[in-house]
Length: 116
Length: 112
Image (cartoon, rainbow over all chains, first blue to last red; front, side, top):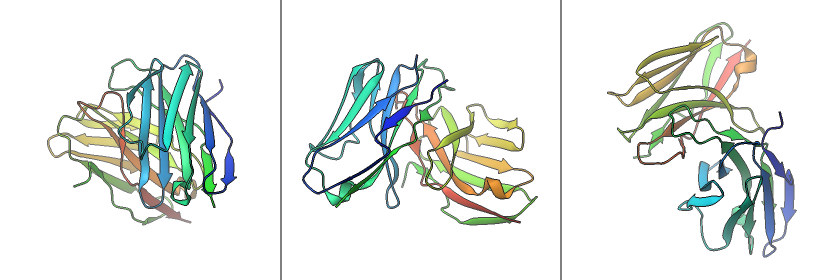
């Protein structure tokens, strides 16, 4: 079975440019999570969706960041305008939300973003 | 106080030894606890989860949970060089919906 798919795997852009990261969750999963990982701050949750609806976006750094989930099989994370401090690895994860304690998140390979 | 705390390490153990990784959490109502392994340049992968007090064993791995002490640990028996990675502890809180809070991770190095 295909896991979580992310694209692009690497992105190099210049400050001020728009960056769009894409994620396809595991088929049948109804929760999707966007994380950012840096050496300084570790793995941080940015936003998560249940059944395509944003539930908690308290981790989104600022208005430059936005996320959408137009359908159950696709989500985007957009940064506009990008800044050098946005350089990080961005992970998408998905899970099948049952409300049970053993609900598990599965991570995609990540997008390594470098903003010059 | 951070919500989930781990010693950053590195924790160095010789091949064949038991590696013990520890994690404490602040939310007393936390419901479930996960251990992920992350190799350098790769994404986190689930090793195991635990949600009841006591021990849970899976192959060479044992997770231990003590909710009264707000403490969860991961033991790796017969450590192998391939176990060298960063181990992330993640906690699902009582009021956090289905989101996880991750610790900063412990770097484990197994020396042959």
